[in-house]
Image (cartoon, rainbow, N blue to C red; front, side, top):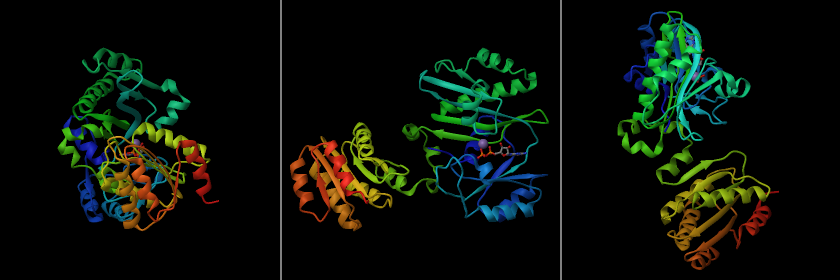
Length: 387
Ligand code: GDP
Ligand code: MN
């Protein structure tokens, strides 16, 4: 689960990581009011779940409360699409209003998991502010890492050695070192998958502060953090993905594909995606109904796939174990009847009650081809795709 910048900054502040003064505004007049309480320049920042806002016009610096109001008027109620948002336009419902900082240098600092080393890792780069993926690709030597033993935490000597190699003034490196320890405390206490501060700014007044903050919490541990669960902003999510989440379905919309895939089990989902590629097209989604989906959940799954305008053919590939194929078939038929949208379907069913399921589907109004195996399914898909 991703947090907004303003929510992440509240957490940073609780854990003694310095941030500039700022408050969130829901309207232009609120933005004006907060701006008038700030001396000097003010930064207005669109609160959306996408990075790269700066380049996309989602960050504006203004001189006075009236201009702040104007910027908020334009932003709130609008949308923002950035190079990181993958084509999605995120609605802007809130802006963060912050005192502008006098930046001397911008660093990058993150804590995340290193799955190769199987431990948390602290990542620091002197090339902050910009796209870190680009830095990693062009100048990998500018990215420094400290691997953390989870039983000990970040060893102070490792942090010291790393900061020493940057030839920073003691005053600065002391602040960064404290920030690293505090970020790690957040990472651990809140079960984060990522904390990213980009930029971590060094100001002309020799203060180190977090100018931007991104925190992502591991979805599997949200149940341990009810206070954080409340921070979830469902407007920032693809609405079909949200519906899926509410129905306990693992659904991910994919770009560019034409085949909607209804599958149970992640392994089968992967294989199914390979098969659609083999049919000369790409999957439009990844939908795993899970091992024990009910009729209602299958109906929801059908509706989610059918409501995707990219989908020309639906490939149903289910293995009946705990999930009974006839239950799945009923769910699909209900979805089709209640949603009243027919999309050609290729169906592979094996396992518990698969024969009953085929009978049910054959007797429905759905346009269905059955396949005994995945290669046959692939050629059936090819036949059904629009030319
Ligand atoms: P992002 O583009 O979504 O990552 O948004 P950021 O919060 O990182 O802001 C992008 C850039 O705006 C930063 O790298 C800074 O260069 C600039 N910026 C943000 N806040 C301030 C500020 O208080 N003062 C100044 N001068 N620049 C700022
Ligand atoms: Mn940033």
